[in-house]
Structures are given as structure tokens and as C-alpha cells.
Image (cartoon, rainbow, N blue to C red; front, side, top):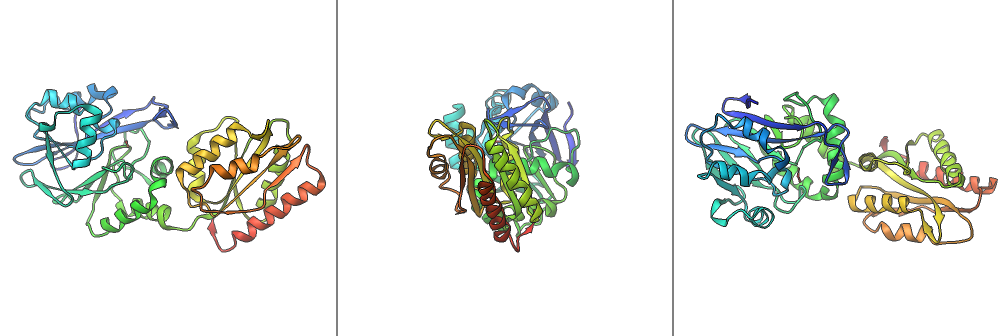
Length: 391
Ligand code: FEO
């Protein structure tokens, strides 16, 4: 593999992982992912920006085989898909120093046992000259760990962002295209970044003061239209949710399914965009992406023994972890002889600062009166959504 020149002295060392199907043993990857390192060559010094997942270290070394000297390894984030090969790079280039902030240094020492004397610590705003190229370090905590950092390459107006603005997308295309990157970027944001909306908002405000020509993340393609990417992020972190309801459900003997179908029909008739997801076999990423936009979340669950179905519990727990901007929630479902399905679900979602709309739990198969309650819930949701942007 040869480094791919992006501009004079700046190279992409992207390692695609097309057949990786799961990230963090949790997140499905329908389009694979990539780990992107970059090489910045000044007239005097050379810096490697991050490394790659150690599983793919040999590809990184293939890129580096003509490179006799690396002076600095800039580490933006200690998670191992970017830092895991740093000990191997240090072994190959023993004169290199790892450049990072104190918190990231601490994490790299504890996660990878890199010796403390291998580091150069930098503070927020500090610069490092490479000879005709100047790296400016921007501490940007909580995208999505507390030590995360970006680097601005002043002369070329590059912003190296590691996970920030990344997308789980393995591709041979160097640059992103709106059509192909939007969904992988949304999936990435929903699963990784959404809980940190307020930190991201602050960082976006800071970045508005920088003249940026390229955003070079460490997953997915390079963005040469930073405005497109930043506008999408601004919408996701600052905008109101949309006229959309996520109805995530599971049914055992069909009663909950009847309620769900009625609700979905009535919502659609009332002009609410609906994403109906069967939790029987579900992709966590689809749930997460729906949560980015949905103003309302309705969980549909039968009662198992005394509580909600475990798959409904999992979905509710996931939604709570991701802290979406949901405004309204409800629960619909069925029971045989009693139980506390609604109370259990409600206890699982304290992070959702949402208004609870009256749940509809029915005994056995829904009666016409039960279905009228569902109609009333649909009507209420449509009313609450009045004035929201299209879903
Ligand atoms: Fe791509 Fe947080 O690591």
C-alpha cells in the first residue's frame, strides 16, 4: 500500500476493514469501518496522526515501509482502534515521541503500558512546528471520551478529528460524498456521539472560528465540504427533533402487534412519520438512528411473567444510554393477569427528559374500546407534534 497524497505533505494511511461486522461487541457495521492514520511531513519533522486497530497493524506498516523516520505520533484518543498500534510503531521507530494531552497520556499508559518517557505532553492551543507545517492541538473532551483532542494543521487548513465527524464506512473513495456518507455518519453519531450533544455543541462553536478546508476523521472518508458536515452535526445536536415517532415493539401472541399496527396506521393518517421496528431481531444502529430525529418513542411490549419483555427492556435501556432529544414517550402492550411492565420501562429511562403520554396496556386481545384508546394516543401524539419539522 502506498500513502495516498491529499495535499502537499499530507497523506492518508487508511486501513479499510470491509468484513468487520460488529464494533465494541455491540454495534452492527453494515458497511464495515476504517481506521485512518495520516502522515504530515514538514521540511524538518514528520508526524503520524494516530495509528490503527492492532488487528490491522501490518497494513499500516505496509504504508510506512518507505518511511525512515517518524518524529511524532500524535494521539488524539486512547481507544485502541486508534491507539492500539502505537506500541508497535514505537518499536519500529524508537526515536519517535507520542504527542498528546495529559489525560490521554494517562490512558495510554494504563491501556497500553507505554513508558512515560515516550511522551511529549501538550496543552490546549499549544503548537508544534514540523518545518513549514504547524500543528495546533485543540482539546475537545467528551467526543466521546474525556481525553479526546483534534489537531488543526494551520498552513493546509486540515482538521484531524479522530472519532469526531467519523463514519463507520469502509470505502476506497478518499473523499466523502453526501449521498453515501450521510447514513454511515448518522449511524456513527447516533451510537457514539449522541449522549455528548452539549460538549459537541461547544466544540462546534469553537471550530466556527477556524478556516477549515478538510476534515480528516479516523473512521470513514475525508470530508472536503466541512460546511455540509458541520451543518448536519449542528442540526443533530442543536435542532428540535422532527415529526417522527419511533414505535419499537415485540409481540408474543399477537395482541401487542394489533395495538402497534393500529397506532402506526392512525399516526400515519395523522401525518406523523413513523419508524416501526420489530425488536425480535434488531439492529441497535437502526434504533439509535431513529432516536436522533424522533420526537416520540413508543415501546410496545407484552407482559412476561411480571414485567416487560426482555427485548423491550434492552431497547429502553439502550435509548436511555444514548440520551436522545426525545420529547414524548409512551408504552403500549398487553398482559394476561397483571404485572408492572409500564413501571419497569419508566424506571429504565430516567435520562429521557420526556413527557410521558398515557400508556395503553390491555388484558388479552384488544377490544374495540382498547383500540379507541390507541386512537386517542395517536391523536395526542399528532397534536404534540404540531409545528415540528417534517420527519
Ligand atoms: Fe474510534 Fe472511540 O474510537
